[in-house]
Image 1 (cartoon, rainbow, N blue to C red):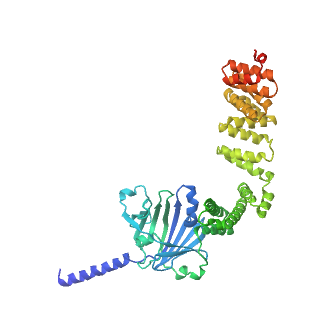
Image 2: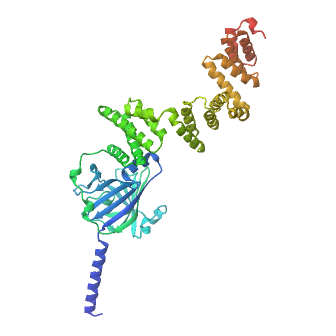
Image 3: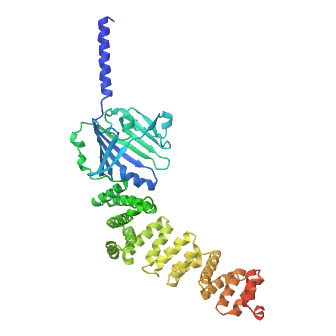
Length: 483
C-alpha cells in the first residue's frame, strides 16, 4: 500500500474510532420503568413499600433527574434532584420536602458468571451488554448491593446530584438488589427502557415549595392520609399500621426527653386509629373497624364512641362474625374461630349452633375439657348434635379426664355438690380410684355428709392414698372409720 493509502486508511479508522467513542459515550436521555419486589417478611414489607412503592418511573436528561413512586398504580411521591457539592438530593411528597440523603463509602467487587447462577440476568432480557457489580458498605459489610448496569445508559460525569446507586456506577441501572442480613431483600428491576427526548418542564420544581422537614414517621402518616383522601383505603390502612407501630415503639421508650411530647403522640395515635377504623368501614370490614373503635373508646373519644354505638352493637356485628367463623373453619384457624364464637355468644349465650362450633374447634385443638363445656351447654339448650357428639366421639379416657377436671374446678370454687357429681361420674367407670375417692369424700364432708365422706376416705386409704389417712384423723370418728 502506498503512503497516500496508508494516510487515508489511518484517517478513516481514526475518525471511525471517534464516531464509535462518541456513540458509546453518549449520555442517556429518556424514561426507565422499574418493578419493585420485597421479600416475604411481612414486618418489613409494608415499611419498605412506604418509601419504595411497587413501581417507579425514572426521567433523566443531562443531569436532571426525576423519579416517580407508585403503589397500586397511584403516584404517591416524586423525587427531584438539586445540584450541590456534597452528593445530596432532595425528596418531595406533593409539595412537602421529605428528606436529604448523604452518600457513604463502599467496597467494589466484580461478580463472576459462576456466582450468578441463581440470578436472572436482566441485561440479556432487555438486550443490553452489562456486568453485575457487588458493593459492600465499608461501615456495614454484612449487607451488600448487586447492581446490573450498562455503558449504553451513561449519565453525566458532572451529575453529582444522583441518588445511590447511580453515585457508584455513573450509569442508570437495569437491576438493583439490596441484600440485608436481618431484613428482606429489595429487588428493583427495569421493565422498559425508552430512549426519547424529554421536555425540560418535566424536571421543573421550586425550592420555595419546601414547607418544613418531615421525619420518616411523619412521612408515613402523610402517605396514609393521602391514600385515604383519594379513597385507596387498603393502602391507607397499610401506612396507618406502619405509623401506629412507630408510635407503639415510641411509647415503649420514654428516654431522652420523649415524655414531653407524649400527649401529642397519644392524640396522633387516636386520630390515626379513627381514620383506620373508617377505612375498614369503607372496605366493608366492620369487625376490624369496630376493634379499632373499641380501643379508642378507652381514651374517652366522643366521635369514636358515637360511631361504635351506631355500627358495633353485638347484633350489628353478628352477620360479620358468622361469615368470618365460616371462613376460619375452612382454613382450620381454630383459635380465631373460638375467639369469634365468644364474641357471637355475647349476643346470645345459648346459641346452640355457635356453642357446637366452639366445641368442635376446641376438640380439634385437643382441648377436650373446654370442648366438653361447650357441648354440655349446647346439649342443655336442646342441641341433639351436641348430645350425640358427647356420647359417640369422646372416648372413655377423655371423658374421665374431663369429669375429673370439672370436679377439681368446682371443688376449687367451693361448689362441693357439683364437684361430688363429677367425681361420681369418674368412679362409675373407675370405682377404686384412690385420689378421686379422696376428693369425693372430702366434698361430701364439706357438704356435712360426714358418714358418706368418711366411707370414701377409708376406701381411698385402703387403696394406698396416704393423704386420705391424714384426712380421716382430721374429720372422721373411730366409728365412722369402720367399714
